[in-house]
Length: 158
Image (cartoon, rainbow, N blue to C red; front, top):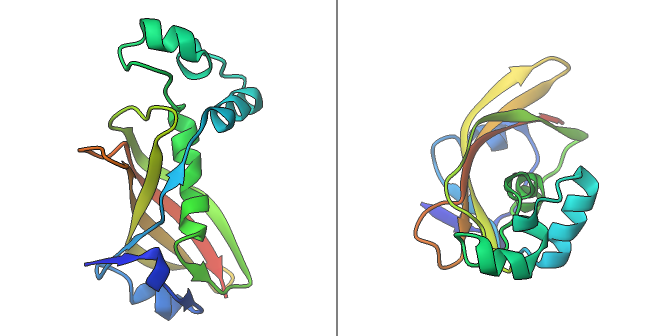
């Protein structure tokens, strides 16, 4: 079962998150990744590889037919897409890490991406918190396979 972002309500407890384990995928809205975003990411990270920031050369020389989005930019969109997909009413939440990240196919600049979030597990942690393991699949609009899959770990304190 898949639930679109437009139908998602707030989750206000660990039990509400636990209820998501194995039951449904939460799907974000589409987010466009333009050249300006790619250029700003290159500036922030120092990754100025031509395949990302030189559209003319990328059209001429890359095997993808144009500039592609940095893999780590694609990955860094996960928290923002999660925040636009559901609201967790909490005292505090933190990104705890990632496991099993794979970049499955390139993302051409100008593509739109969305994420599917499935809760794999919710476990108790110190200070009355819970740790959530999300199976995340990032998709490119019109694509035939995922662009990135990852296990994203968050911690939430209610």
